Image (cartoon, rainbow, N blue to C red):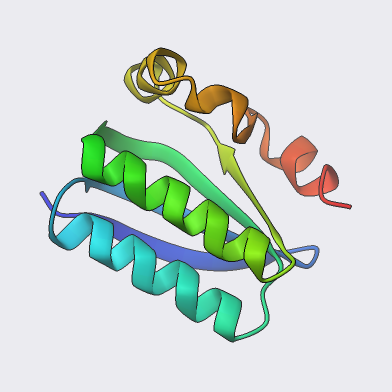
Length: 114
């Protein structure tokens, strides 16, 4: 199953609800294109909701880091929401949990943007 996403706006924060797999190939490229288009459109506060993501491979992790860097370089913030236990474990093992601002509650995550 390839990755699917929907985008919505809540209190000035762009929330991208992801589902499926973020892997080498289609899923990663889709995520990269979506985040870049949001930044180009002027979004500075982006929240990736990973509740529906059941698998991320190493290139998928690279895409998350790339998205984070692109948003930060554009003067924005990218945060992660609702990690599954598998994805959280992967971020702990790779020490990326210390890089990302990770939240478990959508309302608190939206409120956390400056």
